[in-house]
Length: 134
Image (cartoon, rainbow, N blue to C red; front, side, top):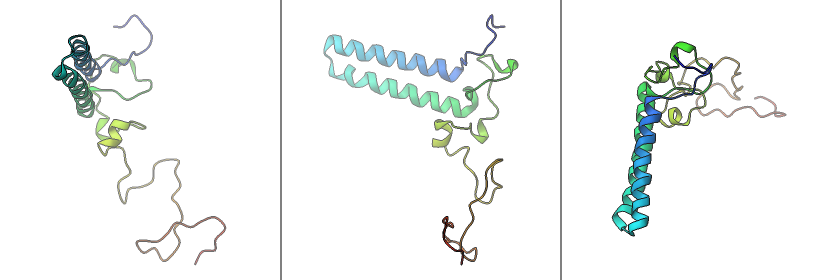
């Protein structure tokens, strides 16, 4: 149980990515101090691997969406079961193709479909304001 009345958002994905990126930064710093080419290249490669590992863990449910969550989901070892649909506004989910409207799916709540000009055939253009419909 946390002593604070709010969720810090600590997750397995976040801590793992931070640890790997920290090692990459240390390797890069060692490369600067020793003027070593392999270490100067290896440090950023390790840090990039940390980014990729964090992304994969997030997509596997070990990250959390932004915003407030119920108290029972505050633990850092709690998996996020909503990640399959994609998190709203999450770049990582969008890059993985999650959270996008599926073809033929109903529009999201609060969204109005754009009127289409033409007979409804594929390739019809959206109607523009001020132009008569054909």
